[in-house]
Each structure stands twice: as C-alpha cells, then as structure tokens.
Length: 289
Ligand SMILES: NC(=O)c1ccc[n+]([C@@H]2O[C@H](COP(=O)([O-])OP(=O)(O)OC[C@H]3O[C@@H](n4cnc5c(N)ncnc54)[C@H](OP(=O)(O)O)[C@@H]3O)[C@@H](O)[C@H]2O)c1
Image 1 (cartoon, rainbow, N blue to C red):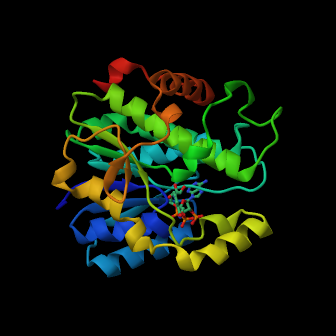
Image 2: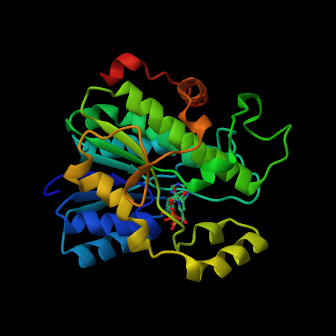
C-alpha cells in the first residue's frame, strides 16, 4: 500500500479508525472523514502514533446533509488527485425517525444517499488511480429487507422502525455496490460490499432508544474487536488475492451470498435512478467507462 491514497468515511471511530490504522501501517496515505473537528483531530493523532505514518489527514463531512457532502467532495478532490481506495464505512443507527436537511429519512440519507453522492462526485479521481477499489460497509442486517417502497421512503404510510430502516439502508449499500460494479465492469475499478461481523463499537449507543442501547451493551462482550471487524475491509483494500474481484458481498474475508432481492439488477438500477432524483443530479453510465 506504499503511497496509495485511501479515503475512509467515519474514520474517527470504531471499524473505520481500526481500518485506517492498519492501512496506514501498510504505508498508505489516509484521509479520514468525520463530522466533528475535535474527533477528527484526535483520531488523526492516534492513527499517526499507532502507525508511525505522518501522511494522515481529515476532511469534515456530515453525510446526512448533501450540501456538506458536496463541499467535502471538493476538498477531497483537491487534496487527492487520485484515490486508490475509497471505503464508504460511516454509518448510523437511529431509533427515531429523523429527516435530513433535504427531507430524506435519516438512516437512508446518511448510510446510502450520502455515500452514493460522495462516490459519484469522486469518480474522476477514483478513475485517475487506475485499478481503484471501492468498499462499502453493508451488514448482515440487510437480510431483514426484501423489497423497497420508493413511494414511502420516509415512512409516511408504513410505521417507522429503527431496525427496519437500518436494515433497508444496508440493503441499499449492497444494491449500490452491485450497480457500481456493473457500471465499472472492464475498467479495473472494483466495488465490493462488506459485513464486518458483530463488532464492539458504539454505533447503537449514540442515537438509539434506551432499550436498544441496553440490548447492545449486553451483547457487546460477545462481539468481536474493532481490529477483527476491520479485517475484511483491510483485505479488500490491500490484498493482491482480491485483484479484479468485484460486485461481491464479503464476510470474514470470503465472498458470501447476500439475500436474493439484494442481487436483483433491476432493483439496483431503480435505486440508482431514485437516488439520482433525490440528489438532483444524474450520473450517466457513459461516465463510468
Ligand atoms: N458494529 C457492528 O457490529 C456493525 C455490524 C455490521 C455493519 N456495521 C457497519 O460498519 C460501519 C462502521 O460502524 P461502526 O460499528 O464502526 O460504528 P461507529 O463506531 O459508530 O462508527 C461509525 C462512524 O460513522 C460516523 N458517522 C455516523 N453518522 C455520520 C454522519 N451523519 N456523517 C458523517 N459520519 C457519520 C461516526 O461518526 P461519529 O463518531 O461522529 O458518530 C463514526 O465515525 C457502519 O456502516 C455500520 O453500519 C457495523
């Protein structure tokens, strides 16, 4: 990874920070994104100290807000003319229904739309790297979702549930990965999705209701460490064994089957189209080749 440029969203905590440390140890130049300047600075210092690598930087981004994503994309583009590895790692769990500044349900907006927009805005710089790798942190949680209702993305008709919406956002991460891989076929750029395992982080303690927090805390001793949770992302980012592998769903560094609806190419195209509508910008197929 010597001199390779890596960008990791949500690199100030949890799996993202562990991934950043491991790739920095391998000699990569790493940009982490964070929604908080103080957390970003503390994480950069920690990553530098743990990896003995000074080429670590940060960009502020709030993925729930498309304005912030567009501003951050410009900053990332100016800092890195080429991006060898983009790890769309950031994610949130929201027990209560929240809307983004653009009026989109919060988990869908953060976990899917924010990364959809960021990846598309960074495409030229990803292409400039040649055999770049895009890695999207999905989850086994996607399995609770089997369909998308594009007419009720904000749960105005169907009742909202934190888990239901989280699962849907992770299902979308896989569909997005599949459509990206299809569009990038033959370019040498790969796109893969990851389930990191049940990992001892604070994801379900930040914006979750008391019983979700309690359940998460009770389960934590049985979960894997962040270092182990980062292993599949690190493998996909750095191993020669996965050269050219694309469109997969990876668990414990092995390709597995995501649920059948998440493999539906027509649903992936429909999600792409809806996502374009929601960000108010088209990203035509011709731009990917
Ligand atoms: N932990 C698990 O068991 C597990 C299982 C399956 C999948 N995953 C996935 O793994 C990824 C990493 O999660 P984690 O467990 O490491 O959680 P984490 O420790 O909470 O880290 C999540 C990261 O995403 C950032 N983030 C959250 N909302 C954001 C927003 N609106 N804008 C920008 N950044 C935002 C967080 O920033 P703050 O520090 O400011 O909150 C943090 O840096 C997520 O995509 C998650 O869905 C985790």
